[in-house]
Length: 436
Image: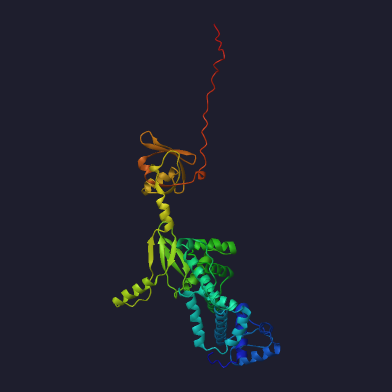
């Protein structure tokens, strides 16, 4: 720890005051005594020492606040404790209470260089494809069961199975699902630092803004403002669209999130500059798939070097059609290719805007269900049923309607139209004609 002229005991007191103040804005002596589980006389002595060093504003029986110097030092002490505890729990798989107690003792003697190397190792586990936290579970297996020729292969096998299972997930399936994000210490620390910065700047987060940010950070899916607003309203009815805009702008301003523009729609994703990735965009359904290929990165660096160009950053967006849309397109055809009795659904209209408007007025809209009554009517026309409406279409118009076959139960049977019969006199009735 860099020289700050504080004993280990006074560092604990200053860290406690910082953590309490961050939650309650101010601290009191009884709060500090309860937090550190010490007597009030010890607290009074420590507060006087900290006040002499101009780290706190202290008057007996009054609220305790931190000076700018004390707040800065307290933040560094809390961060050291948090990083050490995370290393003990996340890497060494130590029980949280034991890790917390040991972090209190280690933080006073650990050099900054050692702490920095611990942080780099945790980042390596998160980002390196050859390592990863799945492999660290093998260490937990070793700690619980020991190591011999019998269980060591089993440990490796379990790790391989988990990695292979993750590799078999299709990108489109993985991206379209509401996949909850595994909370990482790095993300928790980032939000904690953001809260500190906003509190010090006099712009603390409101409760609705904090709820929106938590919801955004707990999900890896690319999110729009409308989608985030709808989900936030389910958690906190006080959230407004303005609240969502403000929360996302705060995240973007502090480089925690970033925006992507695609098909005239803006989506937001988590921004991790240390783990670069590129994007595949489906121009049909709007699916977004993230990918990383070190060969692409090496090729870009090599080309920049050949051009004597200093590469600062890059963003690769590839536009195409996803696997699901390709499968869907293989099943599509035009309406003129349908046979009598087929039940189909409109996918899209291929005509110009004026013709599309005319077809829409007739009820031929995307997703509309159609029942083909007769594909060979007079004059090479066809008769179809769209809801309760019968339409006669010429072949040229039918070729401009792209459809896909649907299951029979998706379209209800068309009820037969009842004909009104005129009442005639029965044949057996005798009609009497009177003579004049």
